Amino acid sequence: MELPQATAEISNAGYWTTSAIILFLIVLSGFFSGSETALTAASRGKLRTQADKGSSGAKRALRITEDNERLIGSVLLGNNMVNILAASLATSMFTAAFGESGVPLATLVMTLLVLIFAEVLPKTYAITNAERAAAHVSWPIAVVVKVFSPVVAIVRLLVRSMLRLLGVAVDPDSNILAVREEIAGALQLGHSEGVVEKEDRDRILGALDLRERVVEEIMLHRSGIEMINAEDAPGDILEQCLRSNHTRLPVFRDDPENIIGVIHAKDLLRAMYKLIGGPDGDAAALKTFDIAEVAMEPYFVPETSTLDEQMRQFLHRRTHFALVVDEYGSLQGLITLEDILEEIVGEITDEFDPLAEHAIKTDAEGQYLIDGAMTIRDLNRANDWNLPDDEANTVAGLVIHEAQMIPTQGQVFLFHGFRFEVLAREGNRITQLKMRAL
Image (cartoon, rainbow, N blue to C red; front, side, top):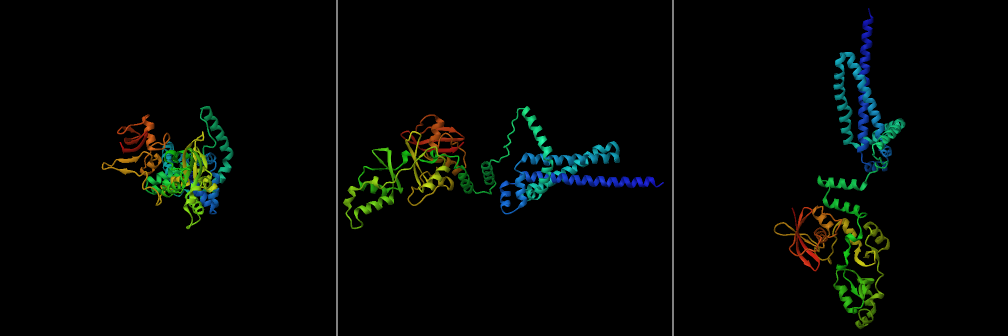
């Protein structure tokens, strides 16, 4: 007579045991889901900073995320195992209690429990505290990865073989982060959300771009270089140096292409002062002055050098001034260390620089008046535009490239979402343009 009661007690004990196992499996599923999100969403830069400060969890997280394919495979294997086991136990328990109607009921209950407590809740927390969560879960996940690595290796081989049959090439190094793009994207996003100032964004992006840009893009073209003729009278040379806004000037003889040196204003004044014999000396002694004896040896660089490499050369050689030549050795322009620094920090001016040499002005209608020699990059940075600079460096060059002709004064062109009107032209050079967005 006591058998039914004992059977009921055993049944109740089995019910609660099964329920406890299911709840444990749901918690385990939540752990796997949250760990996957934390380890994939955590910034490796932030983890590296924490690791450098002595965080062993961050070091471990960095180590296991080096192979994302193996990490995700192991976590997904564990997650699917516990989810399937929990669903099977729940179906068995509900079928025993409610018969055939227990199957849809178990599906509904388990879907809600897994969705809320094993997916949304842990993943939301992991996204909110990615680096901290990644450091905390790194040890147990490292154990899981090690235990499941043989199975994951077989699965990885099988998956790659199937993809290869479908004509899909799998790059084993595809998990390497494109750091520059990550930083640039984060800066653009931060700026659009008002977190990062435009000036800060431009400076950091300018520094990142130094490896991608070449000397030819920012050099002063040879048509704008101020030079000294070595055959000029010493008095004329002195007057030209005193009148110039520049402290360094190239020196040529016979032909502007024949650069024989670069003169620094200080060296010129010291040599002349010494030659005349000090404040009480005879200025007539300047007639024997030869600027070639004072000028420094010119430093030539190819127009294809990157800005990053050129800046390193300037610092290594302890010079700020270089003449740019093409592949045939012909003079194309000049570049200074200041030009490269301006690509990072923006325009650098002092009391001797011409006022607003390429300033952007607006007319009464709000249209932009642009100097034709202004670079496209400077225009884009000033106005947050995206005019292409692949085929031309200056705004005038862009108009000529798109028009496929030398425009005449008054001509109007529409391209890249802007209206360009040629306001002034000198010879074959466009000197001023009027622009407005369409």
